[in-house]
Image (cartoon, rainbow, N blue to C red; front, side, top):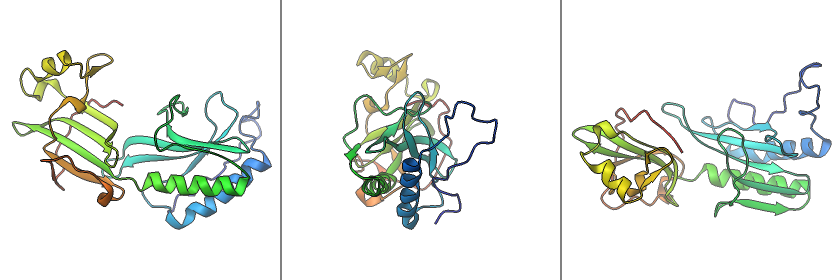
Length: 229
């Protein structure tokens, strides 16, 4: 098992929690204990499990931060919200840890007794942790001008970047005109041609669907520095 204590409930000091925010019920503690035991066989050194509460929601949250182990770049937080007789799991908001308004196709939603919910949650967390994550990179004149981390089994973006200054001339304007832009001018890499190379970051590579014309590589060059979801 990983050295980091998975799903450990840290007891607050006498004056650290005047509103009782971190007072976990016996039911919540039983869920955490069962979840910890069921996750122990597959707990990995590059993952760790946390217990918390989501902002402004009466639930217990058990979650795993996914990262790129090579540089500890945060990619996504996945986790479950436990409500006593129900559990919901999905990709969480990167800061507030809300569940998305529209559940993902791979989301968890189940009701039942605590041991069953802990078992379902552990199985679900393991299945997501084993999903293949690839880093796609686009090159121009020897520079990486765009990059995208994705769940490669469903081609689902985790984080991405696009550097106008080293991109092919005129490409950003063409992508913007075609609608491949979001927020404050953020170019979406889904509008680009097939990436030049892909790097396996984590998870089951055999489950990945590599884009046609993209080759796997183990060489990591410098990437664009502007990252966003």
